[in-house]
Image (cartoon, rainbow, N blue to C red; front, side, top):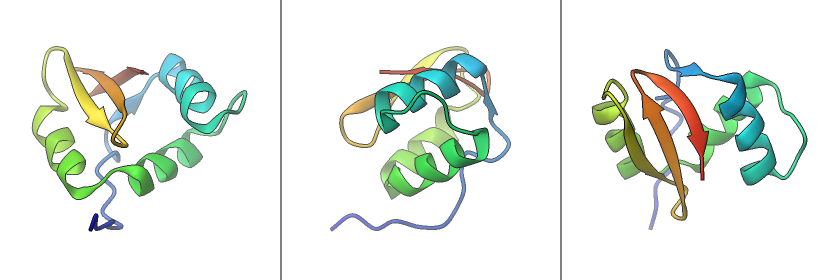
Length: 84
């Protein structure tokens, strides 16, 4: 069983405009969503393991981490760059 928490690990991380656009398009299936809605959705969809991985690697030079079981987040120096 996957446990979801209200702990917002995304807070303090910079979401680029490109990331918000790609997340809206690829994950939400919409044209554009507000930054706070993207952050809320990400926090809801990330399980505890993904949140721990995110916390550990968010300050890395450049890294791909798992997201939502089937996607990947690209992070560079505490900036969310894109999502696949």
